[in-house]
Image 1: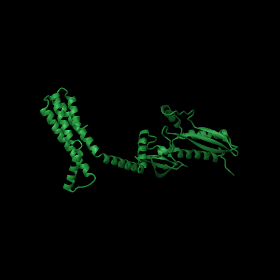
Image 2: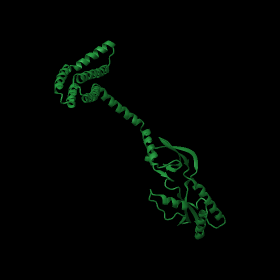
Image 3: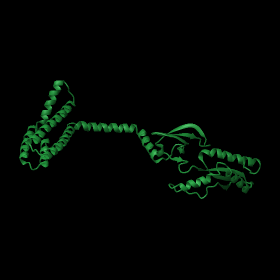
Length: 330
């Protein structure tokens, strides 16, 4: 359907009662379209050839550019002609004139856009293919950065850990000191003694999905620590257990933790975590050559090393006084 025929149809829809003007408009549209039918592309070709020879410009896109300019000029001139015929010669009703001008301006713009798309169709298709290929290549080469970026967004939203949390990722354990767009940093802690090494470990955000992340303080501030105390088979087990309970219960860092832990458990409504006993407890296991007493207690992960050292210091004093007989291989 030619553009003028479309405008004619709109004219009839907008103002059906003006039959005398419709007949004239049909006649005008039919004859004008007949002039371009089958020959409009020849006109574009001749104009392209003329401009190329005039300016000495040749190339695969000269015809496309010239055709685009001609199409825009054609529809703009056509808009002036149709507007003049309908608004000046046609009906004088203000409502009709307003509606026609608004609808025709919209339709004319759509026709220009569609015509330009039609002219540049091959170029647009090639551009889409090229753009898709380049985009895929860039995405593949930057896949690690892209993955880390979106994992960084996940960390910000879900908060599996925060700054100052003590976490373990793969074989690295430490305190989180920074969370950035592509990675996070931890102050490394030695796996054997839980003392800071002073090293900053940079870990990609993607490790949150590809590795297991252990957070020591996400839900509660305290963790369970266990010390194995080996005593001689001839030891007074009851007395030794009593002394161990005394040591841990009198420790300034540990003695208030069970009460604090109970409050944290009462506020927890996200995880189904229950403990029957929060106070220190001792388990016993008899071996072939010695008896193992496992002293288990709650402690803050960042204070674990100091507390354990204090406990062993008290045990060593008792051993020197023969109040506890520690096992020693002879």
